[in-house]
Length: 574
Ligand code: DGT
Ligand code: CA
Ligand code: CA
Ligand code: ZN
Image (cartoon, rainbow, N blue to C red):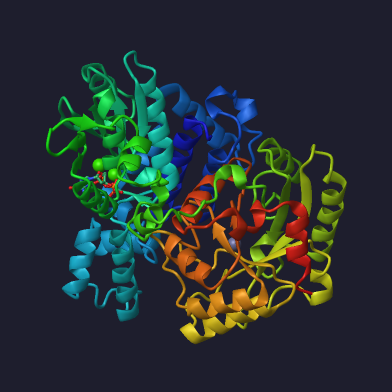
Protein backbone atom coordinates (compact mmCIF):
# COMPACT_ATOMS: atom_id res chain seq x y z
CA UNK A 1 0.00 0.00 0.00
CA UNK A 2 1.29 3.47 -0.84
CA UNK A 3 1.87 5.57 2.28
CA UNK A 4 -0.71 8.35 2.55
CA UNK A 5 1.90 11.15 2.84
CA UNK A 6 3.42 10.05 -0.47
CA UNK A 7 0.04 10.34 -2.17
CA UNK A 8 -0.55 13.76 -0.65
CA UNK A 9 2.85 15.03 -1.71
CA UNK A 10 2.34 13.57 -5.18
CA UNK A 11 -0.97 15.43 -5.56
CA UNK A 12 0.55 18.66 -4.29
CA UNK A 13 3.55 18.55 -6.61
CA UNK A 14 1.40 17.58 -9.56
CA UNK A 15 -0.85 20.54 -8.82
CA UNK A 16 2.18 22.80 -8.65
CA UNK A 17 3.38 21.48 -12.01
CA UNK A 18 -0.06 22.20 -13.50
CA UNK A 19 -0.06 25.68 -12.03
CA UNK A 20 3.38 26.39 -13.46
CA UNK A 21 2.26 25.14 -16.84
CA UNK A 22 -0.91 27.29 -16.77
CA UNK A 23 0.94 30.47 -15.95
CA UNK A 24 3.14 29.77 -18.94
CA UNK A 25 6.23 29.66 -16.79
CA UNK A 26 9.28 27.55 -17.37
CA UNK A 27 8.08 24.38 -19.12
CA UNK A 28 11.19 22.53 -18.00
CA UNK A 29 10.43 23.37 -14.38
CA UNK A 30 6.84 22.18 -14.71
CA UNK A 31 8.06 18.88 -16.19
CA UNK A 32 10.58 18.51 -13.36
CA UNK A 33 7.85 18.85 -10.71
CA UNK A 34 5.66 16.44 -12.58
CA UNK A 35 8.42 13.83 -12.66
CA UNK A 36 9.15 14.38 -8.97
CA UNK A 37 5.45 13.97 -8.18
CA UNK A 38 5.32 10.61 -9.94
CA UNK A 39 8.54 9.44 -8.32
CA UNK A 40 7.30 10.26 -4.83
CA UNK A 41 3.87 8.77 -5.49
CA UNK A 42 5.55 5.52 -6.48
CA UNK A 43 8.27 5.54 -3.82
CA UNK A 44 8.37 2.53 -1.53
CA UNK A 45 9.16 4.35 1.73
CA UNK A 46 6.89 6.77 3.59
CA UNK A 47 8.28 10.24 2.74
CA UNK A 48 7.16 11.68 6.07
CA UNK A 49 9.75 9.44 7.72
CA UNK A 50 12.65 10.59 5.55
CA UNK A 51 15.17 13.30 6.38
CA UNK A 52 16.18 15.84 3.68
CA UNK A 53 19.18 13.78 2.61
CA UNK A 54 17.10 10.66 2.20
CA UNK A 55 14.44 12.62 0.29
CA UNK A 56 17.02 13.64 -2.28
CA UNK A 57 17.86 10.00 -2.95
CA UNK A 58 14.43 9.57 -4.56
CA UNK A 59 14.85 9.69 -8.35
CA UNK A 60 14.00 13.12 -9.86
CA UNK A 61 13.96 14.81 -6.45
CA UNK A 62 16.41 17.71 -6.19
CA UNK A 63 16.93 20.36 -3.58
CA UNK A 64 13.98 22.62 -4.40
CA UNK A 65 11.56 19.69 -4.44
CA UNK A 66 13.01 18.27 -1.22
CA UNK A 67 12.66 21.68 0.44
CA UNK A 68 9.01 21.93 -0.56
CA UNK A 69 8.29 18.41 0.67
CA UNK A 70 9.95 19.22 3.98
CA UNK A 71 7.94 22.44 4.25
CA UNK A 72 4.74 20.56 3.55
CA UNK A 73 5.51 17.88 6.11
CA UNK A 74 6.40 20.54 8.69
CA UNK A 75 3.58 23.03 8.13
CA UNK A 76 0.91 21.29 6.07
CA UNK A 77 1.27 23.71 3.17
CA UNK A 78 3.85 25.11 0.75
CA UNK A 79 3.98 28.85 0.28
CA UNK A 80 5.08 28.68 -3.37
CA UNK A 81 2.07 26.49 -4.16
CA UNK A 82 -0.30 28.76 -2.25
CA UNK A 83 1.01 31.76 -4.17
CA UNK A 84 0.58 30.00 -7.50
CA UNK A 85 -2.97 28.95 -6.53
CA UNK A 86 -3.90 32.50 -5.65
CA UNK A 87 -3.04 33.62 -9.17
CA UNK A 88 -5.43 31.27 -10.95
CA UNK A 89 -9.13 30.62 -10.30
CA UNK A 90 -10.02 27.03 -9.43
CA UNK A 91 -12.28 26.83 -12.49
CA UNK A 92 -9.35 27.51 -14.79
CA UNK A 93 -7.38 24.73 -13.14
CA UNK A 94 -10.34 22.44 -13.77
CA UNK A 95 -10.32 23.47 -17.42
CA UNK A 96 -6.76 22.17 -17.80
CA UNK A 97 -8.08 18.70 -17.04
CA UNK A 98 -10.17 18.72 -20.23
CA UNK A 99 -8.53 16.21 -22.59
CA UNK A 100 -6.90 18.00 -25.58
CA UNK A 101 -7.19 21.47 -23.99
CA UNK A 102 -4.11 21.69 -21.81
CA UNK A 103 -2.72 24.48 -19.63
CA UNK A 104 -1.55 26.90 -22.33
CA UNK A 105 -4.88 27.12 -24.12
CA UNK A 106 -6.75 27.30 -20.81
CA UNK A 107 -4.68 30.32 -19.85
CA UNK A 108 -5.36 32.04 -23.19
CA UNK A 109 -9.10 31.54 -22.69
CA UNK A 110 -8.90 33.00 -19.21
CA UNK A 111 -6.69 35.92 -20.16
CA UNK A 112 -8.40 36.94 -23.39
CA UNK A 113 -12.03 35.96 -22.79
CA UNK A 114 -12.18 35.73 -18.97
CA UNK A 115 -13.51 32.18 -19.23
CA UNK A 116 -13.01 30.70 -15.78
CA UNK A 117 -14.84 27.37 -15.63
CA UNK A 118 -15.60 24.28 -17.71
CA UNK A 119 -19.25 25.31 -18.00
CA UNK A 120 -18.37 28.84 -19.14
CA UNK A 121 -16.11 27.34 -21.76
CA UNK A 122 -18.85 25.06 -23.10
CA UNK A 123 -21.25 28.02 -23.22
CA UNK A 124 -18.67 30.19 -24.99
CA UNK A 125 -18.18 27.55 -27.69
CA UNK A 126 -21.92 27.21 -28.22
CA UNK A 127 -22.21 31.01 -28.47
CA UNK A 128 -19.31 30.97 -30.98
CA UNK A 129 -17.33 33.36 -28.83
CA UNK A 130 -14.08 31.52 -29.51
CA UNK A 131 -14.27 32.34 -33.22
CA UNK A 132 -11.37 34.59 -34.17
CA UNK A 133 -9.25 33.65 -31.19
CA UNK A 134 -5.83 32.62 -32.61
CA UNK A 135 -5.24 28.88 -32.30
CA UNK A 136 -8.91 27.96 -31.82
CA UNK A 137 -10.40 26.80 -35.12
CA UNK A 138 -13.64 24.80 -35.50
CA UNK A 139 -11.69 21.54 -35.17
CA UNK A 140 -10.26 22.68 -31.82
CA UNK A 141 -13.73 23.64 -30.63
CA UNK A 142 -15.03 20.25 -31.59
CA UNK A 143 -12.15 18.55 -29.75
CA UNK A 144 -12.75 20.62 -26.64
CA UNK A 145 -16.46 19.82 -26.60
CA UNK A 146 -15.64 16.16 -27.08
CA UNK A 147 -13.15 16.41 -24.18
CA UNK A 148 -15.72 18.05 -21.94
CA UNK A 149 -18.14 15.28 -22.85
CA UNK A 150 -15.61 12.63 -21.86
CA UNK A 151 -14.94 14.40 -18.60
CA UNK A 152 -18.61 14.68 -17.78
CA UNK A 153 -19.28 11.10 -18.79
CA UNK A 154 -16.97 10.01 -15.98
CA UNK A 155 -19.21 12.38 -13.96
CA UNK A 156 -16.71 13.06 -11.23
CA UNK A 157 -16.60 9.34 -10.50
CA UNK A 158 -13.45 8.14 -8.77
CA UNK A 159 -11.01 5.56 -10.06
CA UNK A 160 -10.89 2.20 -8.32
CA UNK A 161 -7.60 2.72 -6.48
CA UNK A 162 -8.59 6.07 -5.00
CA UNK A 163 -11.92 4.71 -3.76
CA UNK A 164 -10.33 1.48 -2.49
CA UNK A 165 -7.69 3.32 -0.49
CA UNK A 166 -10.33 5.52 1.11
CA UNK A 167 -12.66 2.60 1.84
CA UNK A 168 -9.95 0.42 3.36
CA UNK A 169 -8.89 3.28 5.57
CA UNK A 170 -12.48 3.92 6.71
CA UNK A 171 -13.02 0.24 7.44
CA UNK A 172 -9.78 0.09 9.45
CA UNK A 173 -10.70 3.17 11.49
CA UNK A 174 -14.26 2.07 12.24
CA UNK A 175 -13.25 -1.51 13.01
CA UNK A 176 -11.12 -0.21 15.89
CA UNK A 177 -14.13 1.11 17.78
CA UNK A 178 -15.59 -0.93 20.60
CA UNK A 179 -18.97 -2.35 19.76
CA UNK A 180 -18.07 -2.91 16.11
CA UNK A 181 -19.34 -6.39 15.31
CA UNK A 182 -18.69 -6.24 11.58
CA UNK A 183 -17.51 -3.62 9.13
CA UNK A 184 -17.13 -3.75 5.35
CA UNK A 185 -17.50 -1.64 2.26
CA UNK A 186 -20.39 -2.37 -0.09
CA UNK A 187 -21.78 -0.67 -3.24
CA UNK A 188 -20.09 -0.43 -6.60
CA UNK A 189 -16.67 -0.68 -4.95
CA UNK A 190 -17.40 -4.15 -3.61
CA UNK A 191 -18.59 -5.07 -7.10
CA UNK A 192 -15.34 -3.53 -8.41
CA UNK A 193 -16.94 -1.42 -11.07
CA UNK A 194 -14.35 0.54 -13.02
CA UNK A 195 -15.39 3.88 -11.53
CA UNK A 196 -17.02 4.62 -8.21
CA UNK A 197 -19.72 7.24 -7.55
CA UNK A 198 -19.50 7.08 -3.79
CA UNK A 199 -18.11 4.75 -1.17
CA UNK A 200 -20.65 2.82 0.92
CA UNK A 201 -19.50 1.63 4.34
CA UNK A 202 -21.53 -0.70 6.51
CA UNK A 203 -21.12 -1.37 10.24
CA UNK A 204 -22.98 -3.91 12.35
CA UNK A 205 -23.38 -2.62 15.90
CA UNK A 206 -26.06 -2.15 18.54
CA UNK A 207 -25.45 1.56 18.94
CA UNK A 208 -24.66 3.80 15.97
CA UNK A 209 -23.70 6.99 17.83
CA UNK A 210 -19.96 6.40 18.34
CA UNK A 211 -19.52 5.31 14.70
CA UNK A 212 -21.20 8.39 13.28
CA UNK A 213 -19.12 10.51 15.62
CA UNK A 214 -15.83 8.92 14.58
CA UNK A 215 -16.78 8.97 10.89
CA UNK A 216 -17.38 12.72 10.78
CA UNK A 217 -14.25 13.42 12.81
CA UNK A 218 -11.67 11.81 10.49
CA UNK A 219 -8.84 14.11 9.35
CA UNK A 220 -9.67 14.00 5.64
CA UNK A 221 -13.33 14.91 6.07
CA UNK A 222 -13.95 18.15 4.17
CA UNK A 223 -17.62 18.41 5.05
CA UNK A 224 -20.59 16.55 6.53
CA UNK A 225 -23.39 16.27 3.99
CA UNK A 226 -25.98 14.65 6.24
CA UNK A 227 -25.86 13.17 9.68
CA UNK A 228 -28.42 10.80 11.09
CA UNK A 229 -28.82 7.82 13.33
CA UNK A 230 -28.87 5.24 10.52
CA UNK A 231 -26.88 7.00 7.84
CA UNK A 232 -24.23 9.69 7.69
CA UNK A 233 -22.61 11.09 4.54
CA UNK A 234 -19.33 12.93 4.30
CA UNK A 235 -17.29 14.54 1.58
CA UNK A 236 -13.54 13.96 1.72
CA UNK A 237 -10.76 16.33 0.81
CA UNK A 238 -10.49 14.41 -2.48
CA UNK A 239 -14.08 15.36 -3.32
CA UNK A 240 -15.20 11.78 -2.89
CA UNK A 241 -18.42 11.09 -0.98
CA UNK A 242 -18.73 8.29 1.56
CA UNK A 243 -21.90 7.00 3.22
CA UNK A 244 -21.84 5.14 6.52
CA UNK A 245 -24.78 3.00 7.52
CA UNK A 246 -24.98 1.27 10.89
CA UNK A 247 -27.26 -1.76 11.00
CA UNK A 248 -28.30 -4.20 13.76
CA UNK A 249 -26.01 -7.27 13.78
CA UNK A 250 -28.81 -9.72 13.08
CA UNK A 251 -29.67 -7.87 9.84
CA UNK A 252 -26.06 -7.67 8.63
CA UNK A 253 -26.35 -10.20 5.80
CA UNK A 254 -29.48 -8.64 4.34
CA UNK A 255 -28.07 -5.12 4.62
CA UNK A 256 -24.77 -6.09 3.03
CA UNK A 257 -26.61 -7.83 0.22
CA UNK A 258 -28.88 -4.83 -0.31
CA UNK A 259 -26.21 -2.14 -0.25
CA UNK A 260 -23.81 -4.12 -2.42
CA UNK A 261 -26.34 -3.98 -5.24
CA UNK A 262 -26.42 -3.63 -8.08
CA UNK A 263 -29.94 -2.29 -8.24
CA UNK A 264 -30.64 -4.59 -11.19
CA UNK A 265 -29.37 -7.63 -9.25
CA UNK A 266 -31.42 -6.65 -6.19
CA UNK A 267 -34.60 -6.40 -8.20
CA UNK A 268 -34.09 -10.04 -9.21
CA UNK A 269 -33.32 -11.25 -5.68
CA UNK A 270 -36.39 -9.44 -4.33
CA UNK A 271 -38.58 -11.11 -6.98
CA UNK A 272 -37.23 -14.50 -6.04
CA UNK A 273 -37.94 -13.72 -2.39
CA UNK A 274 -41.55 -12.93 -3.26
CA UNK A 275 -41.87 -16.34 -4.96
CA UNK A 276 -40.69 -17.93 -1.72
CA UNK A 277 -43.28 -15.91 0.23
CA UNK A 278 -40.50 -13.78 1.67
CA UNK A 279 -39.76 -10.09 1.71
CA UNK A 280 -36.15 -8.99 1.23
CA UNK A 281 -35.02 -5.49 2.18
CA UNK A 282 -32.10 -3.70 3.74
CA UNK A 283 -33.68 -4.52 7.13
CA UNK A 284 -33.72 -8.25 6.66
CA UNK A 285 -35.37 -11.23 5.05
CA UNK A 286 -38.90 -11.56 6.44
CA UNK A 287 -41.56 -14.21 6.28
CA UNK A 288 -44.46 -12.49 4.50
CA UNK A 289 -47.16 -14.17 6.59
CA UNK A 290 -45.73 -14.00 10.08
CA UNK A 291 -43.68 -10.86 9.47
CA UNK A 292 -40.78 -12.50 11.30
CA UNK A 293 -37.18 -12.01 10.32
CA UNK A 294 -35.32 -15.11 9.10
CA UNK A 295 -31.86 -15.89 7.77
CA UNK A 296 -30.58 -12.30 7.70
CA UNK A 297 -27.31 -12.52 9.57
CA UNK A 298 -24.99 -13.45 6.72
CA UNK A 299 -25.18 -13.05 2.97
CA UNK A 300 -24.69 -16.80 2.55
CA UNK A 301 -27.84 -17.45 4.58
CA UNK A 302 -29.83 -14.89 2.62
CA UNK A 303 -28.85 -16.38 -0.74
CA UNK A 304 -29.36 -19.93 0.53
CA UNK A 305 -32.88 -19.11 1.69
CA UNK A 306 -33.58 -17.89 -1.87
CA UNK A 307 -32.34 -21.17 -3.31
CA UNK A 308 -29.11 -19.57 -4.58
CA UNK A 309 -25.44 -20.14 -3.91
CA UNK A 310 -23.55 -17.12 -2.56
CA UNK A 311 -22.83 -14.98 -5.61
CA UNK A 312 -19.48 -13.11 -5.81
CA UNK A 313 -20.18 -9.34 -5.69
CA UNK A 314 -18.32 -8.79 -8.97
CA UNK A 315 -21.00 -10.86 -10.75
CA UNK A 316 -23.99 -9.03 -9.30
CA UNK A 317 -25.04 -7.02 -12.35
CA UNK A 318 -27.96 -9.11 -13.58
CA UNK A 319 -25.87 -10.36 -16.48
CA UNK A 320 -26.98 -13.97 -16.11
CA UNK A 321 -25.62 -14.70 -12.64
CA UNK A 322 -29.08 -15.35 -11.18
CA UNK A 323 -29.94 -17.91 -13.88
CA UNK A 324 -26.51 -19.52 -13.59
CA UNK A 325 -26.87 -19.65 -9.80
CA UNK A 326 -30.30 -21.26 -9.98
CA UNK A 327 -28.92 -23.90 -12.36
CA UNK A 328 -25.90 -24.45 -10.09
CA UNK A 329 -23.61 -23.27 -12.89
CA UNK A 330 -22.01 -20.14 -11.49
CA UNK A 331 -18.47 -19.79 -12.84
CA UNK A 332 -15.65 -20.39 -10.40
CA UNK A 333 -14.22 -16.93 -11.05
CA UNK A 334 -10.51 -16.27 -10.80
CA UNK A 335 -9.18 -14.82 -7.53
CA UNK A 336 -6.02 -13.02 -6.52
CA UNK A 337 -4.74 -16.28 -5.01
CA UNK A 338 -4.91 -17.96 -8.44
CA UNK A 339 -2.48 -15.45 -9.96
CA UNK A 340 0.96 -17.05 -10.34
CA UNK A 341 2.84 -14.21 -11.94
CA UNK A 342 2.84 -10.86 -13.68
CA UNK A 343 3.57 -10.67 -17.42
CA UNK A 344 3.87 -6.91 -17.97
CA UNK A 345 6.28 -4.82 -15.85
CA UNK A 346 8.73 -1.96 -16.46
CA UNK A 347 12.03 -1.07 -14.84
CA UNK A 348 14.21 2.04 -14.77
CA UNK A 349 15.82 0.85 -18.01
CA UNK A 350 12.84 2.62 -19.62
CA UNK A 351 10.10 4.55 -17.81
CA UNK A 352 9.81 2.47 -14.64
CA UNK A 353 11.04 3.82 -11.32
CA UNK A 354 12.50 0.68 -9.77
CA UNK A 355 15.61 -1.26 -10.68
CA UNK A 356 15.39 -4.73 -12.17
CA UNK A 357 16.55 -6.25 -8.89
CA UNK A 358 13.94 -4.38 -6.88
CA UNK A 359 11.12 -5.36 -9.25
CA UNK A 360 12.08 -9.03 -9.13
CA UNK A 361 12.48 -8.96 -5.35
CA UNK A 362 9.04 -7.36 -5.02
CA UNK A 363 7.45 -9.95 -7.32
CA UNK A 364 9.08 -12.66 -5.22
CA UNK A 365 7.70 -10.94 -2.11
CA UNK A 366 4.21 -11.30 -3.55
CA UNK A 367 4.79 -15.04 -3.77
CA UNK A 368 4.74 -15.18 -7.57
CA UNK A 369 6.12 -18.22 -9.36
CA UNK A 370 7.26 -16.03 -12.23
CA UNK A 371 7.53 -12.44 -13.38
CA UNK A 372 8.23 -11.09 -16.86
CA UNK A 373 10.22 -7.90 -17.28
CA UNK A 374 8.83 -6.13 -20.35
CA UNK A 375 10.50 -2.78 -20.89
CA UNK A 376 9.57 -0.59 -23.85
CA UNK A 377 11.03 -1.28 -27.30
CA UNK A 378 12.94 1.24 -29.49
CA UNK A 379 10.05 2.66 -31.53
CA UNK A 380 8.83 4.55 -28.47
CA UNK A 381 11.61 7.03 -29.09
CA UNK A 382 11.57 8.86 -25.79
CA UNK A 383 12.43 5.65 -23.95
CA UNK A 384 15.70 5.36 -25.90
CA UNK A 385 15.82 1.59 -25.90
CA UNK A 386 18.60 -0.02 -27.91
CA UNK A 387 19.59 -3.58 -28.86
CA UNK A 388 22.63 -3.33 -26.59
CA UNK A 389 20.63 -2.17 -23.59
CA UNK A 390 18.01 -4.85 -23.90
CA UNK A 391 20.59 -7.61 -24.43
CA UNK A 392 22.53 -6.43 -21.39
CA UNK A 393 19.29 -6.53 -19.44
CA UNK A 394 18.74 -10.08 -20.62
CA UNK A 395 22.10 -11.10 -19.16
CA UNK A 396 21.08 -9.62 -15.83
CA UNK A 397 17.69 -11.29 -16.00
CA UNK A 398 19.33 -14.67 -16.60
CA UNK A 399 21.62 -14.14 -13.63
CA UNK A 400 18.70 -13.13 -11.38
CA UNK A 401 16.60 -16.10 -12.44
CA UNK A 402 16.50 -18.51 -9.53
CA UNK A 403 18.15 -16.07 -7.12
CA UNK A 404 14.86 -15.02 -5.59
CA UNK A 405 13.49 -18.22 -4.07
CA UNK A 406 11.14 -20.00 -6.40
CA UNK A 407 10.34 -16.93 -8.50
CA UNK A 408 11.46 -17.41 -12.10
CA UNK A 409 12.28 -14.35 -14.19
CA UNK A 410 11.26 -14.15 -17.82
CA UNK A 411 12.77 -11.68 -20.24
CA UNK A 412 10.20 -9.91 -22.35
CA UNK A 413 9.49 -6.58 -23.97
CA UNK A 414 6.53 -4.37 -24.70
CA UNK A 415 6.60 -3.85 -28.45
CA UNK A 416 4.91 -0.98 -30.26
CA UNK A 417 2.35 -1.90 -32.86
CA UNK A 418 3.16 0.56 -35.66
CA UNK A 419 0.55 2.22 -37.92
CA UNK A 420 0.62 -0.78 -40.29
CA UNK A 421 0.77 -3.47 -37.64
CA UNK A 422 4.52 -3.99 -37.71
CA UNK A 423 6.51 -4.20 -34.50
CA UNK A 424 9.92 -2.90 -33.46
CA UNK A 425 12.42 -5.68 -34.04
CA UNK A 426 12.88 -8.33 -36.76
CA UNK A 427 11.70 -11.88 -36.07
CA UNK A 428 15.20 -13.25 -35.33
CA UNK A 429 15.75 -10.66 -32.66
CA UNK A 430 12.30 -11.20 -31.16
CA UNK A 431 13.03 -14.93 -30.93
CA UNK A 432 15.45 -14.17 -28.10
CA UNK A 433 12.67 -12.99 -25.79
CA UNK A 434 10.71 -15.37 -23.60
CA UNK A 435 7.63 -13.27 -24.12
CA UNK A 436 6.45 -10.31 -26.19
CA UNK A 437 3.60 -8.01 -25.31
CA UNK A 438 2.61 -5.73 -28.19
CA UNK A 439 0.63 -2.54 -27.70
CA UNK A 440 -0.67 0.47 -29.58
CA UNK A 441 1.05 3.62 -28.35
CA UNK A 442 0.50 6.02 -31.27
CA UNK A 443 -1.79 6.86 -34.23
CA UNK A 444 -4.93 6.38 -32.14
CA UNK A 445 -7.06 8.26 -34.66
CA UNK A 446 -6.64 6.01 -37.68
CA UNK A 447 -9.84 4.80 -39.33
CA UNK A 448 -11.63 1.82 -37.85
CA UNK A 449 -10.49 -0.34 -40.75
CA UNK A 450 -6.85 0.64 -40.39
CA UNK A 451 -6.92 0.06 -36.64
CA UNK A 452 -8.57 -3.33 -37.04
CA UNK A 453 -6.08 -4.47 -39.69
CA UNK A 454 -3.23 -3.17 -37.56
CA UNK A 455 -4.27 -5.19 -34.49
CA UNK A 456 -5.07 -8.29 -36.54
CA UNK A 457 -1.59 -8.13 -38.15
CA UNK A 458 -0.02 -7.90 -34.71
CA UNK A 459 -1.95 -11.02 -33.66
CA UNK A 460 -0.74 -12.81 -36.77
CA UNK A 461 2.87 -12.10 -35.88
CA UNK A 462 3.99 -15.42 -34.38
CA UNK A 463 6.41 -13.61 -32.07
CA UNK A 464 3.65 -11.59 -30.43
CA UNK A 465 2.13 -13.45 -27.49
CA UNK A 466 -0.08 -10.83 -25.83
CA UNK A 467 -1.83 -7.67 -27.02
CA UNK A 468 -1.27 -5.07 -24.28
CA UNK A 469 -4.05 -2.67 -23.13
CA UNK A 470 -5.95 -3.57 -26.33
CA UNK A 471 -8.26 -0.55 -26.69
CA UNK A 472 -5.78 2.03 -25.24
CA UNK A 473 -8.60 3.86 -23.46
CA UNK A 474 -7.75 6.02 -20.46
CA UNK A 475 -10.76 6.32 -18.19
CA UNK A 476 -12.17 9.85 -18.32
CA UNK A 477 -9.38 11.01 -20.65
CA UNK A 478 -9.17 9.00 -23.86
CA UNK A 479 -11.80 6.84 -25.51
CA UNK A 480 -11.17 3.34 -26.78
CA UNK A 481 -9.80 3.17 -30.32
CA UNK A 482 -12.34 2.62 -33.02
CA UNK A 483 -11.27 -0.90 -34.09
CA UNK A 484 -13.72 -3.73 -34.85
CA UNK A 485 -13.07 -5.62 -31.64
CA UNK A 486 -14.96 -8.74 -32.65
CA UNK A 487 -12.62 -9.07 -35.63
CA UNK A 488 -9.65 -8.64 -33.30
CA UNK A 489 -11.02 -11.18 -30.83
CA UNK A 490 -11.54 -13.67 -33.67
CA UNK A 491 -7.94 -13.15 -34.77
CA UNK A 492 -6.70 -13.68 -31.22
CA UNK A 493 -8.60 -16.93 -30.88
CA UNK A 494 -7.39 -18.14 -34.30
CA UNK A 495 -3.72 -17.30 -33.71
CA UNK A 496 -3.52 -18.17 -30.01
CA UNK A 497 -2.70 -14.60 -29.01
CA UNK A 498 -3.71 -13.62 -25.49
CA UNK A 499 -5.45 -10.35 -24.69
CA UNK A 500 -4.30 -8.31 -21.75
CA UNK A 501 -6.51 -7.18 -18.91
CA UNK A 502 -4.35 -4.22 -17.95
CA UNK A 503 -4.83 -3.60 -14.23
CA UNK A 504 -3.79 0.04 -14.06
CA UNK A 505 -6.80 1.72 -12.46
CA UNK A 506 -7.09 4.37 -15.18
CA UNK A 507 -6.93 1.71 -17.93
CA UNK A 508 -8.75 -1.50 -16.91
CA UNK A 509 -8.32 -2.49 -20.53
CA UNK A 510 -9.92 -4.77 -21.63
CA UNK A 511 -12.99 -3.70 -19.71
CA UNK A 512 -15.46 -6.17 -18.20
CA UNK A 513 -17.86 -6.04 -21.16
CA UNK A 514 -15.08 -6.50 -23.69
CA UNK A 515 -13.79 -9.47 -21.69
CA UNK A 516 -17.23 -11.09 -21.80
CA UNK A 517 -17.29 -10.63 -25.57
CA UNK A 518 -13.73 -11.85 -26.11
CA UNK A 519 -14.32 -14.91 -23.96
CA UNK A 520 -17.20 -15.94 -26.20
CA UNK A 521 -14.66 -16.03 -29.05
CA UNK A 522 -12.51 -18.44 -27.04
CA UNK A 523 -9.65 -16.05 -26.29
CA UNK A 524 -7.09 -16.44 -23.46
CA UNK A 525 -6.17 -13.55 -21.22
CA UNK A 526 -3.20 -12.17 -19.30
CA UNK A 527 -4.10 -10.10 -16.24
CA UNK A 528 -1.14 -7.76 -15.80
CA UNK A 529 -0.18 -4.86 -13.56
CA UNK A 530 1.87 -2.97 -16.21
CA UNK A 531 3.76 -1.84 -13.07
CA UNK A 532 6.10 1.11 -13.44
CA UNK A 533 7.11 0.87 -9.78
CA UNK A 534 7.30 -1.76 -7.08
CA UNK A 535 4.04 -0.56 -5.52
CA UNK A 536 2.14 -0.77 -8.79
CA UNK A 537 2.57 -4.54 -8.80
CA UNK A 538 -0.27 -4.49 -6.28
CA UNK A 539 -2.63 -3.03 -8.87
CA UNK A 540 -3.06 -6.65 -9.97
CA UNK A 541 -6.13 -6.81 -7.69
CA UNK A 542 -8.02 -4.32 -9.89
CA UNK A 543 -7.30 -6.46 -12.94
CA UNK A 544 -8.51 -9.54 -11.10
CA UNK A 545 -11.71 -7.70 -10.12
CA UNK A 546 -12.26 -6.66 -13.73
CA UNK A 547 -11.60 -10.22 -14.91
CA UNK A 548 -14.18 -11.51 -12.41
CA UNK A 549 -16.68 -9.03 -13.80
CA UNK A 550 -15.88 -10.58 -17.17
CA UNK A 551 -16.64 -14.07 -15.73
CA UNK A 552 -13.09 -15.37 -16.24
CA UNK A 553 -11.94 -18.52 -14.52
CA UNK A 554 -8.33 -19.50 -13.90
CA UNK A 555 -8.35 -21.68 -16.97
CA UNK A 556 -8.93 -18.57 -19.12
CA UNK A 557 -5.95 -16.71 -17.68
CA UNK A 558 -2.44 -17.67 -18.79
CA UNK A 559 -0.74 -16.15 -15.74
CA UNK A 560 -2.84 -18.33 -13.49
CA UNK A 561 -1.17 -21.35 -15.09
CA UNK A 562 1.92 -23.16 -13.83
CA UNK A 563 5.09 -22.05 -15.61
CA UNK A 564 5.29 -25.22 -17.71
CA UNK A 565 1.85 -24.72 -19.21
CA UNK A 566 2.56 -21.01 -19.73
CA UNK A 567 5.81 -21.84 -21.57
CA UNK A 568 4.03 -24.30 -23.84
CA UNK A 569 1.48 -21.59 -24.64
CA UNK A 570 4.29 -19.14 -25.46
CA UNK A 571 6.21 -21.61 -27.58
CA UNK A 572 3.57 -23.39 -29.57
CA UNK A 573 3.09 -20.43 -31.87
CA UNK A 574 6.35 -20.54 -33.79
P1 DGT B 1 -22.14 4.27 -7.43
O1 DGT B 1 -22.08 4.76 -6.04
O2 DGT B 1 -22.85 5.18 -8.35
O3 DGT B 1 -20.81 3.89 -7.97
O4 DGT B 1 -23.00 2.92 -7.47
P2 DGT B 1 -23.58 2.05 -6.27
O5 DGT B 1 -24.01 0.76 -6.85
O6 DGT B 1 -22.62 1.99 -5.12
O7 DGT B 1 -24.89 2.85 -5.88
P3 DGT B 1 -25.32 3.64 -4.56
O8 DGT B 1 -24.18 4.14 -3.79
O9 DGT B 1 -26.33 4.63 -5.00
O10 DGT B 1 -26.12 2.57 -3.71
C1 DGT B 1 -25.45 1.45 -3.14
C2 DGT B 1 -26.27 0.22 -3.31
O11 DGT B 1 -27.47 0.32 -2.54
C3 DGT B 1 -26.75 -0.04 -4.72
O12 DGT B 1 -25.80 -0.74 -5.49
C4 DGT B 1 -27.98 -0.86 -4.47
C5 DGT B 1 -28.53 -0.32 -3.20
N1 DGT B 1 -29.58 0.65 -3.46
C6 DGT B 1 -29.53 1.97 -3.21
N2 DGT B 1 -30.68 2.55 -3.55
C7 DGT B 1 -31.46 1.60 -4.05
C8 DGT B 1 -32.78 1.57 -4.58
O13 DGT B 1 -33.48 2.57 -4.67
N3 DGT B 1 -33.27 0.36 -4.98
C9 DGT B 1 -32.52 -0.77 -4.87
N4 DGT B 1 -33.03 -1.93 -5.28
N5 DGT B 1 -31.30 -0.77 -4.39
C10 DGT B 1 -30.77 0.39 -3.98
CA1 CA C 1 -21.82 3.81 -4.02
CA1 CA D 1 -24.08 5.56 -1.71
ZN1 ZN E 1 1.91 0.29 -22.93
